[in-house]
Length: 258
Image 1: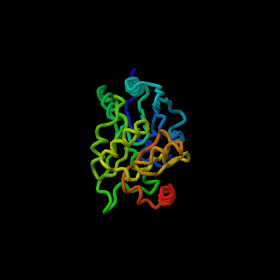
Image 2 (image 1 turned 90 degrees about the horizontal axis):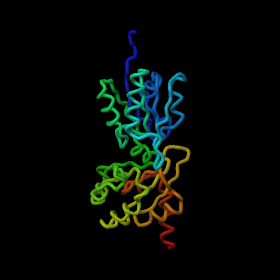
Image 3 (image 1 turned 45 degrees about the horizontal axis):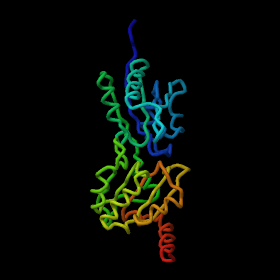
Image 4 (image 1 turned 90 degrees about the vertical axis):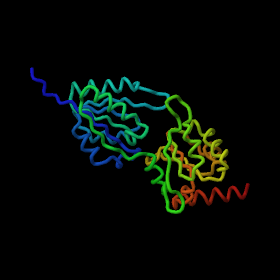
C-alpha cells in the first residue's frame, strides 16, 4: 500500500500568555495540524486555532510536575509525525528561549523529518513591555541580559553574577526560587538601590506585580504573595515606566515613613 503520509514538524511559539500574542504564522500552522503537542505554558484559548479533528496531546511541564520527560516528548513528536503527518509542537513563549526547542528539532531531523520554526513572542520581552518597562532606553540602558534563574542542574546561572557587574537591564526567568541568591549577588556589587519589578503571570488576567529595590524586593514578594511563574526585571528602566510610577511613589513614601 502506498503511504501518502508526509511527516512534518513545526515548532510554534505560543507567546507569553495573552492568546492574542500568538503570531498569524502560528495561527496558520495550527490550522493545518493533524496533531498538536502542547505545553502547560501555552494559553488554552490558543488551541481553538487547531482543527477539531486534530489529535491534541498535553505534554506540559510545570515546576515539580512533569507529564513527560524531554526524551519522551522527542519520541512522541517523531512517532506522531510518522503516523499522522503534520505535527505542531506548541510551546509557551519562544521555542528557542529556554524552551529546549532545538533539542526537539534535532531529534526530528535525525529521522529525516522536515522541520520548521515559528518564533513566538518571548515573555522576557512582552511581560515587561505590558508594564511599560522598556528594556533598553536611550541614556538609561544600552543592553539587556535574559538569563535563566535555574539551570538544568538546578543551580543559579553563573551569568547572574556577571550581569550584576554590568549597567544592563537584567531579566531573569525561572528565578523565584533563587531570589535570595540573586539579591546577594547584586548587593555584592553595591546595587542595593537598583529598581526591581517582579511580574507573576504576566500578560494574563491573573497578573500580579511587586516593585521595589534589590534591598527590599524580598519583603515585597512576601507582602504581595508573589510566586512562580514570574519574571524578575532588574535595572533603572523599571523606574522609568509610566505605568509603575504610582508604585514607586508609594514605595518611596513608605520608605520615608520607615
